[in-house]
Length: 76
Image 1 (cartoon, one colour):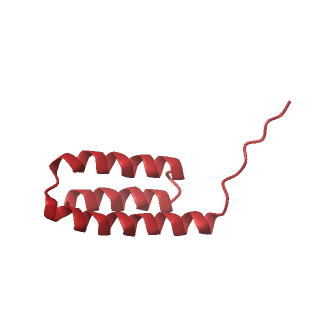
Image 2 (cartoon, rainbow, N blue to C red):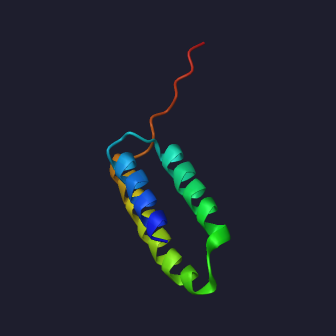
């Protein structure tokens, strides 16, 4: 669980530093979770939920701060 916390903190730090896009951040968080799930025991799930909710809150607040993503312009 501690490895997951450290890994996700680093992912979010990279996202906040604009080195990861929103999509890249979510994909990295999902990959970290996928690597952890097979090793979880029942008593670890509540602690995992707390970490995931905190991560989600940070990411969503940053997305609100940034505003809508730039639209891709199609030139014909």
